Image 1 (cartoon, helix red, strand yellow):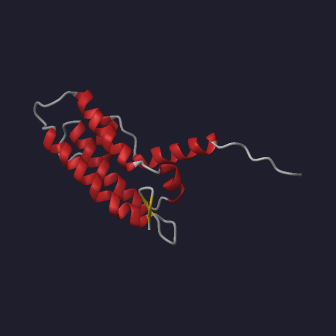
Image 2 (cartoon, rainbow, N blue to C red):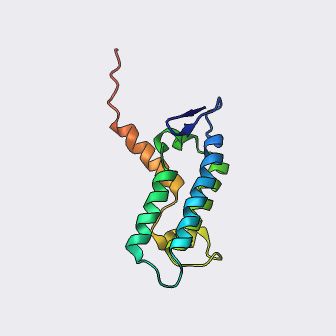
Length: 131
């Protein structure tokens, strides 16, 4: 069942959501690779803008699914982020995920999702116990 852009299932593991999200992110990152060639092309500010667009697509609903993030879902997120980070640094496909994301200044999205979840948890009003 799709609700507010999140694909929900009975187990609440969001694997169906990430199976649908990963191709969308890869297509967006692929469009970026066609727009921003390694030699020439826009400067770093434009590349950061495109990276922010794909990042917002990836992290939509993060406070809901961040606590239930399974290893296979992290792999799907990091595959898309690697394609984007390699293009942002004007690197080649042989660059590792860690190096590309570090040089692009983009922390892993699974960690950013956990930060967003913790921040949204702090924003909720405190619950008063009746004791």
